[in-house]
Amino acid sequence: MPEGPEVETVRRDLEKLVVGSTITAVRATGRRSVRRYGDGPSALAAFESDVTGLRIVGTGRLGKYVWLQVDRGPESGPPGQESPAQESPAQESPAQESPVISALVIHLRMSGQVRWHVPSDELALHTHIVMVLDNGHELRFVDPRTFGEVWRTDDPIRELAHIGPDAVIAATDARTFSAALRARRSPTKAVLLDQGFVAGIGNIYSDEICFAAGVRPTKRANELTKPQAARIATHTQAVLTNAIERRGSSLKDRQYVDLLGEGGLASAAHHVYDRLGQPCLICGTSIERTKIAGRSSYFCRKCQR
DNA sequence: CAAATATCCTGATAGC
DNA sequence: TGCTATCAGGATATTT
Image (cartoon, rainbow, N blue to C red; front, side, top):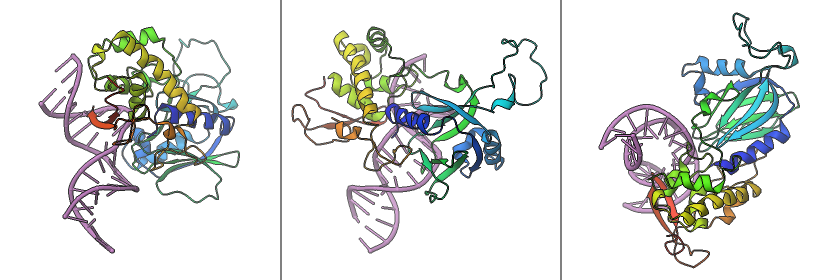
């Protein structure tokens, strides 16, 4: 399941492989992947025409959302919408020449993949969007479970206004983070999963962070001692940074792979996630599983209190 | 009002 | 063997 580290790996691949190129053609076949354009049959065409012609000028990420910064190229002219000039007497920038930048946002949800191909490559099952680039390659959006989505919107992205600081990028200082954590009454793991509290942590890394911090994931955040909360803060950074260095976690189902189809190596470093009944790597105690916020949660009862 | 639950979906796997 | 039931989970809507 793609979480912050996996999405960051995708962003780095995109930065390397597609920035500087232009989307010359788009073929959308999966309606659910473009559902922000409506639920009728016209959504596919609406997405295609909205995205065709975009020039990719950068990348961005917040939590599990990744986006391409795009514009309409040098001839697209300044501000306003792309359509006729009708209003805007109160435009803030005085006659700027730089084209308007917007964001082509991607959320992989459970099973989405962004893949980099040459046109002759066979289409994988569940390929819902193909974006043809002017550099001889294609970006493809593949998503068996169709929870993921792609849409273009303003940059800054108003749809992400409710998302909290990114767990890695924002690097909220440990004192602020742990104080905010101790103000919450839910189980610690549930707080870590709350994207409005901190963005980018999913079911795998929330368990791994709790383990690294020696905290039982069921422990109510307001009942954490100050040292415990501080350890959650520092290990949030450490666990995610380490996972990014390993290019993310690919589970046995390989639902997450990078743009070239390669899996990440972070799963080999998991201490608790999906290790039910296996010995704790620190003390040998059998790893247990419980349910928190509807999610399978793994922990060592001896190492985590 | 916060927290638990249902929902969307396919594929892997468990159980009979 | 081959079928059905269950589970996996990110975000959001709905219910408790």
